[in-house]
Length: 415
RNA sequence: GCGGGCGUCGCCAAGCGGUUAAGGCCUCGGAUUGUGGUUCCGAUAUUCGGGGGUUCGAAUCCCCUCGCUCGCCCCA
Image (tube, rainbow, N blue to C red; front, side, top):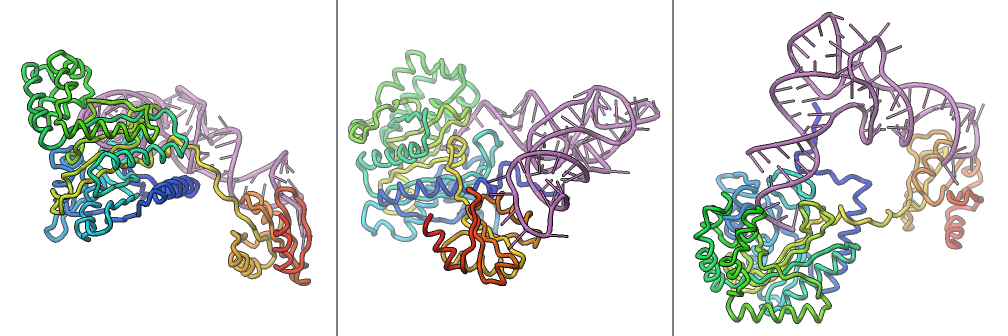
């Protein structure tokens, strides 16, 4: 019997872990420089939290969640992390912490979908959430951070798309106007759109079906989409956001009136960053403002904005730096001495490994060479007898005899 | 949930009905009983994802199944 990783899950193997460490380290630096603090929440929560928080009519909740029963409670693996962070925010009374509260997270998310390029069932997101600022300066900071993180990885061909989907009040109005406009032609739309018409009409704007796209471009409907039907405060929020973005030197974005995010909690600002080198699943970052969510989940009315980056998707695009080479490889006739000296050398802050097989010198040295180590520390019979080491520079091939570890470090000190 | 492509050693692969399933990389051993990264030699798949069938004979043909992969949908 052999076992394989489950469909849509992947092992992160030893020779790729440094890519992850690199991404984590670089993004952590950027986010913490902007005073965001890390939060780690559980990977499962009450199913109810996601049903309410993400929205039970969304695909994510309706058909992509891993749920299970435990003593009569329905639990779910998190499909995204905003709901969990908001739950923690409320549970720990974080609204009493100095405002704004800026959090970041990274970790695995789970969605039961058919895997394909850029889409797994267990995948990783890096995200930020900013609580307590209702003005668009917060939207701007958060968007700028996303751009900074992505550009730090040398990602080109990025496209920032931006939209304002209004607040609960004006969005309803907008929805109704859209439905009115679509109604006469509803029968020509695809099956999915006809369902969306009832459940969540704004999602029709997001349909990729060519026919639907054509219909949306027809005069009566397009006017509604481009007609800025959102309320004056929402429009003002958007105008100001654009001013802030300009201050931050973010000017090459596209306003996409048809950008509607798939999660129910967003209001006003929504955005997406896509990369045209990615193929079909081309979103690397998605986010927006979600002012109603905290109170919806039972907390005090608190405005918030955030985003999430798909880590696997950026990994497929970046060329990571080389991993750090090993400092020292110990070659010895005595396994005991090799082990002991590896330990001594590590205590002093060097990385060190040894050959555990007790093979002959040529093989041990071959292993040392292939390990990529900078130095071989040779401890043969003769060295052991005279209490010395032979240090070989594996790059230049030079070697010399030194007296004890102290002599070795003295030698390293000169390099 | 619906479509397309693919499954031969840890990895990359040749083979496309005829007795022992190329080759390369990696790994291991030897040349080299204390000196590597070069070179040379040698070892490693009773078996071709799995199960049936056709045939004197199958990795090669047929059926089923499993897995991977790409796209739709959805999203990070």
